[in-house]
Image (tube, rainbow, N blue to C red):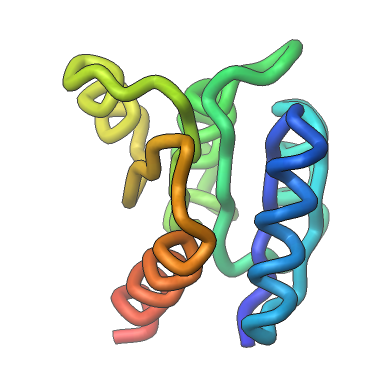
Length: 124
């Protein structure tokens, strides 16, 4: 299946997402901050990135913008995972280049379905 990068500073959420995606057959790389996410995306062959917006050092929005600005990662699908649920927050996420936006708390089944949907769109 796919190699998914997970970046979230909350260890419980990171572990839950990693467990669910591994259970679904995906290979997972999990990191705890934005700089590590950017490094992992550039150093590994990653098929999709799940980014928390609020992370220490570098936000998920900044990581997404950096990924979009670099030819090597410009087309990497990105899903934002965040507690920020206001309409303006969602708009900012999509403006930064996100392909999807999941609001915490979320269902692990919904997460898995959205990952599959985004990956299927990319394969076409």
